[in-house]
Length: 294
Image: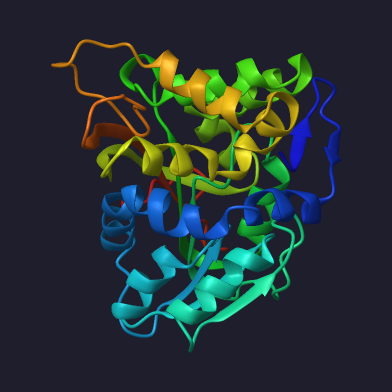
């Protein structure tokens, strides 16, 4: 966790480099075992944002550069920031001609109005209002910002993963993990965006799938996200993995979301509903009540 907004509205920012270290501990497992589940959301966002040859695109929380790879194939001029040097090293291998930097998403190292499109795939959560302020600053007037985050927990078996993270963390750290998901509640993301001057235009969802060949690979995948760092440090890797596996006890016919952590082989964890949120930066001449449609 990098930033949390308190009830009084004051924001506290922890060391973003510490967050980068958490995500970097198992960078290759994240890049090659876990992150590919999100490819359908990359495709959807880049298509809806009309990314084409020459689009100036910034990916905030770019991680290992997988989304940037797809954007570059479309011809975009890609830049990305992340807190993890280990993930950025993979990104630079994947997209050698992109500009990837280690930076704080609450202090983007770019001038105002630098980008036509700014994306953030599961990097901005409830309480990260300061990151949206920065996105608004670097987005050109009329440009598009697109965020993804986990959807309604009642429709998402992947919620079991976050419950396992919370259960294996200290109470305070567990509460923070659960609080992050509040962005998926009706109207919350819209309010966060509108408060920065970004105008929400569209919301949707996309189905994603994770596949792992066996239980051991699934265990490596579930330990890879930085969000699991505190849980593993507090309870130990074996306890965390066992807890995550135990939490998924749904019937075999039920669609399940990554990571379902089922003990069967092979692992094919299905149907995560990732919420998508699009918005535009208002043009200086736009009427205050105007609605842009992506």
